Image (cartoon, rainbow, N blue to C red; front, side):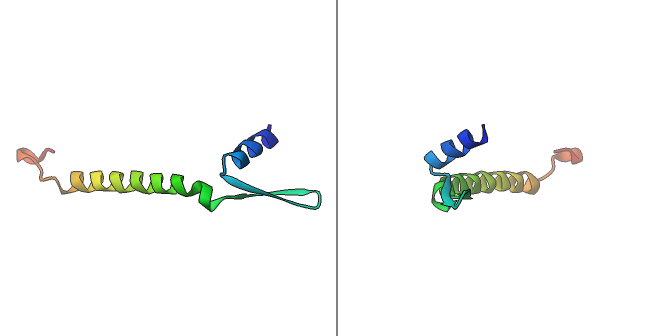
Length: 65
């Protein structure tokens, strides 16, 4: 099962595969993971901006938000 997952990740360009003797070495592919990094950076930026807006919101009368 693990080898099938690694094969799928390799084919998707998310990991790089090399063979050293009888060992198979898998490494994360920076180029393949770049779109995920860009997506996660946007998610975090949006989430932090939302939190900032909520934190900076003035309380309503009576101290309730």
